[in-house]
Length: 256
Image (tube, rainbow, N blue to C red; front, side, top):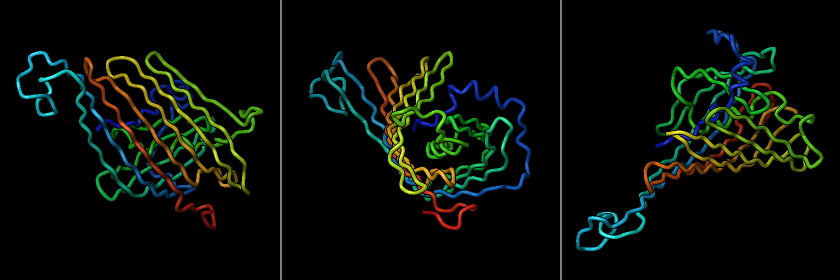
């Protein structure tokens, strides 16, 4: 299964900001967050067949060379569990140093990983243990300080972040809804285009409820579709649907 956690492809500027940060062991957390997650991922492999070299007996997946057309093979997985985030320190450049880990019901357990998160959705992680899971990277995007920043919001309650490098372009658009108390809804769309041999296009549509007093999301819902060409006439389309809900915050007396 192809992972969708490609969130750090186009964050060269953030890498410059955090150059020299030492992820030392042992800092005492200043905040502890726990989120419940529910994720479902499906992949559809589409193969265009020409019928050249076909044999008698008709087409179908068991005999794709028998006729021209399209063959689809679908697979999927799902899981539930919790994600724990320890906020360790605040950097001079406003980045939060955090440690994230995941405990899943089935097979998505993830070891603790150190990351730095920013209010502009930039995320940089120690990749010693490999890539994060989709649900981990999605959560980290919204944990930076001043994620909902009045200085970046226009008269239509909209703001945008974009970044690019030699092989990728990522754009994230956000729109605020009407606040209810300390909570405000946010609708967002993220588009990531990566070129090259392993290139792909990914579009994420989502909503979140952000608590401005607590400065964290209390719920996130995302639906991401990733399309990648795997050969001449062959495509892999992956759809990831996930929900994250705040269960515990060490700085809050209760979670709304």
